Length: 247
Image (cartoon, rainbow, N blue to C red; front, side, top):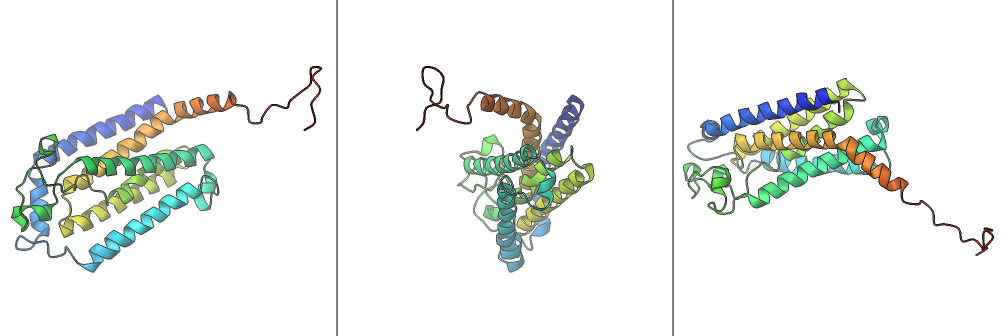
């Protein structure tokens, strides 16, 4: 990544963060949740289209894509053949790091789901998902949106493909964002997440991919330097005169 590209993407991340914080400060989450609920209840909560197709099946497809990327490190197929091993490794690492970050954040945060709130038929009061809410909620673990990360975690493809094919990079960017938003909205209709949960997932995945891309050249140089200092073969034993000994 060039210095100019680094700062351009840094400005994108900072601008999106500012907009995200403004959304958090607004009542937008509750407005959207109330629009998706009917008479204070999420009637789509158990609908098969959202519970199986948009949740279980979509998550399975997402893991198949991750397995395809991991297998492509050794056996690249399809479009992966256009990428170098280093580029394929960057894609895998940025994807897995994004998924791990979202999972860890969900584990530490006890924010409850919309369907847990008293306003929507649950039992909990509205607290929010900021640091002030940690430990005050009853273990909802609904922030950020884990299901949406199935799509957003692939945002790293944009950075991987930019040096190879800008058009393909933009297609992956649009596809990853569209899938992440679609999966996030499907869970919001069920009452499993607020819009901010999905938006924070998108920002965290994007920022993770950007950080990996920025650090990747230095990591590669460090790895290549380490490999050059490690002999690939064991030394051949020799006699005092330097002749190789038979084993």
